[in-house]
Image (cartoon, rainbow, N blue to C red; front, side):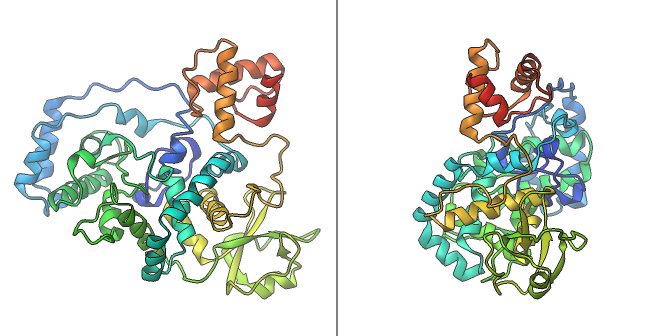
Length: 424
């Protein structure tokens, strides 16, 4: 529910908060802060202010804006200028597809686990109360918070009114964005969040866990009791709203999201699939155990077998994983939150990876390692800017050049092999 559309441009993972788009996606601003755009930016088009104001005038009297008073509409649109820079983002096509081991490596690294454990300790009392109210595990909420905004550190900086107003009048999917624009104006009209705070992604997601405006009205709650549903500045409101979304999505109290499992030799994957849930006895009779070889527990009434990459880790997942999936329609996204929540819950666990290794000899890089790679490229004279862990177009072009020099496949991917080669 959350940020949206942004990472689709990189990962082709649909995002539920923009499910009406049918192609929406994202992996959260925390991830987008690491995975910068992969292709050269397009020049923004020239947009007519007169055409924009004419469009807004028509919107004011449309059914979608019936709940918005004339005074509110005039206040926030009379001087509004279109933001042409959002349109190339709307139309940008991905040139780089990330394997699951890269995705997980950067979203669930040592830094994020440490910050997640600290956040859990700091907000434990609030999270316990949220669990009492919604039934949603505190660690799961922390996992969403970490992936969506890096625990509130990456909220985005674009004006929702300007972005959504622009997307309501220009480009594709105008009908969808008009509904979100109306919801954003309603948030301002009802005084939930100040205009200066209503900022986020270019597509309109905002807050600590990146809600779209319409999602705000479906799931946001006032948990701190100040009379406002403030998912931007109120951590209790943001975390409780996240839990409410998951509850509405079918989260079942007391059940795990699932667990990593070990498949017997020669196991047929014909029954695999997150949606193809079977009783645990079915999987036991097929010889499936926990990853460490222990028998499957009785903590799930049924589960589906999820195998993100053939030959890699396998998981039995239940209804609570489905709730995570509904937050951002991506199994990889759900798995990142699930693993982060596991590591936050077990402060003694030092191993970040799963028991079964990924089927690759070139694992992905953490954020710290991305910076290390960038520094190595800078040392070699590539003008990629300051090392920030964001693997964008300039960094990928530099990577391709080094891959060519080293006789490696020039695919622009940042991996362990390249990092080691550049360290020599």
